[in-house]
Length: 239
Length: 268
Image 1 (cartoon, rainbow over the protein chains, first blue to last red):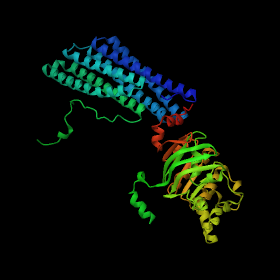
Image 2: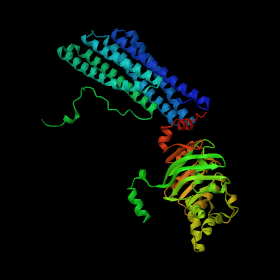
Image 3: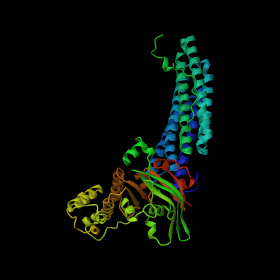
Image 4: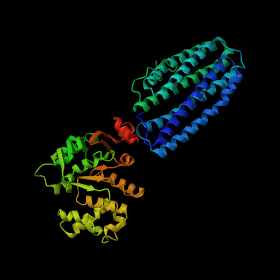
C-alpha cells in the first residue's frame, strides 16, 4: 500500500503471495463454473474433469501455507504487511474449501446423471449463478484491496440464505408429491447446501479483506436471511 | 497517603493509571538546532514505554530530558514542562542529584566503573547514604544483583572487577547498579544493542520483571524488541512525536502513515 519496502525482495515476495492467491481464486472460480455447468448440462465428462482438478487447488494451498510460514519466520512482518500475510493464509483456506465444495457438486452431478431429471433443477443453477457472482466480486475486492466492495459482498449472503431456504422447501414438496423423486432431490439438496456453503466462505473472505485493509473487523450487523432451522429460543418450550 | 490517593484514582484498572511522568509541550534546542518539537507524552507507572524512530528523530533526546541529562550538554536548551509525580523536574529549586536517584539510567554500552562488582552496585547507595551499616549495604547489593538476575552468576567473585564480566553480564551489572538506589523510573538507551541474542533475551526478561516495581522507558532501534518488551510504543520522526499507542495496536494497526512506513521498513 504505502510505497515500497527498502528491501526490494520483500516487495517481490509479497506480490508473489498475492499472485498465488489470485491464481488460486481463478482456479476455484473455474472449478465452481465447471461443476455448475456439468450439473446443468448433465455433462459427466466435465464433472469428471472438475473432480480431477481439485488437487491443483490443494497444491497451491500447500504452496501458500509454506510461503506464508517462510515470510513470517524470515521477515517478521508487522502492521499492514502482517495483516496481508495472515489474510492470504486465511483466504487460501477459504478458497480451498470453495474448490472442495465445487468438486462435491461435480460428484453429485455424476450421480444425478444416472437418474431421470426432476423438474426443480432450475432453482439450483439460479442459486449457483448468484454464488458465482459473489465469489467473483469477492476475488475482485481482494485483488483491488477494496473494502467497500467486500462489505457489499458480505451483505449479499442474506440473499443466498433466502434462496437456499426457498429451494429447501421446494425440494421437500417435490419429494412429498412423488417418492420416486427422493433420490434426485436429496442429491440436489446437498448440492444446494454445498453452494450455500461456498457463499459462506466468500463471506469469510470479505471479512478478511476488510480486516487486512482497515485493520478492524466489519462492525455492522449482518442481515440474517430466513432460516430452515427453527428459532432456538422456541426449542424445548412446552406449548 | 500516596497509596491512598493513587488507589482512589485507579480502581484496579491499568488503563487509567495516573501518569508517572508527563511531558508537556517539550522542546529541545541544541544551539540553533530544534531537536525536539512540542512533545506531549504521558508515561504510565509500572509500564514499559518504548521510544522508536529513525536515527536523529529525537527519541534519545527525549529520554535524556526525563532525568535532565541534557543539562550536561553545552548549548542545549529545554522548554516546556516534564513532571514526575506531578512535580516539575525543571523547577529551579529541584535537586538534580536527587532527581537522578529517582530516575536511573542504563546506557547503550555497558559502562561499569573500574571497581569490583560489589563496589559497582554499592556506589550509589553509599553516595546517597541509603545504607546505615555494612550489613545494610551488603543486603542492598545482594538484592540488587538478585533482581538484576546476576547474583547466581557472580556471588563467588564479588570482589573481582566488574569490567571482567561478559558484555551481557556487564549490562545486567549496570542495571543492578541503577536499581540499587531504588529509583522510581529507569531509562534505558538501547540497552541491548551491544549484546548477543541470549544476553538480550535475559535483559528483556529482566525488564519484564522490573516493570512490577519500576516505570521503564526504553529507546530501541530494534522494532522486534519494542514489540516484545513494551506495553506502549511512541514513534518519533524528525523531532516530533508522531504516534503513541498500545504496542499491540502500533504493530498491528498503526494509524499514522509515517509509523506504518517506519515499522514495515518502507522509509524513503
